[in-house]
Length: 319
Image (cartoon, rainbow, N blue to C red; front, side):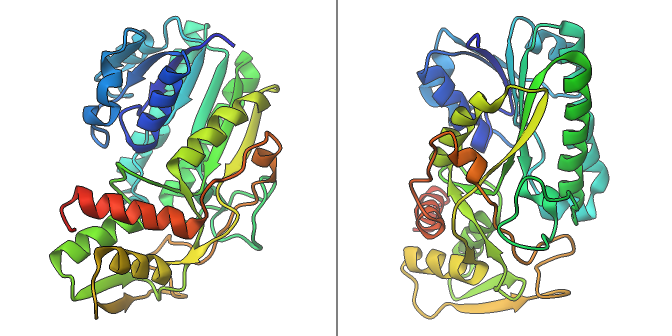
């Protein structure tokens, strides 16, 4: 595999960590990011590397995409609107920023003809509310959120293009990836709420929702190891942790890390105790396929949450 790559969304949370690791391991990396969710600062001094290039553009810009895929063998498609809850109230936004952009990228790849591998940052949300946990890769995609539907739709597009145009592709179905630089999700939301009102914390749902949380460094390690699985036209691979914790426990970790006493939890459940329409009550991924590569998470869900809570609270000035 030629170590030349395009990373869409490479200045975002997960994409920036991937970009750093690729550059550190001798890759030539080009990042395409419109900085709507990412930040140039996430790339640190790596943005001055000779083997790094930055294209400040949107994936809806066909010309920018044509330039971006030129002369690269590997594409990591990590650009997307990550706000699951937002997709419920603004579905058009997620269609444009998740499905349309994936189609545009695939068209650019098809026309260029030089890309041999494509790795897609998908999500556990494609499974919806699983019938049993842990959920394996062969479970049906039954998304209950528009966000999940956009990821599942993107997977179908990638599958078709992969088989038609001889691109080796893997869809990485990530659980909740957490760590420094995180700017969305439950930990970030709790941190902002506690900064505003340390005496009371609103929890969307009944707090009994269970999630698996994976430290970002572990997610990148899994991603790079899973590259070895790209032998056929299209495959999927779960990337998550072996355990899970409740949303109430996540809230308590934030309060503990912040050093707060007596913070009152206020619950706002809908339907069967979830936080919003499209939320999932319980999900944990089966990660046996990823572990076949020799990968093992270094941190469990609780420690991943605890470390993320500390970095997030410090970053927003809450501690």
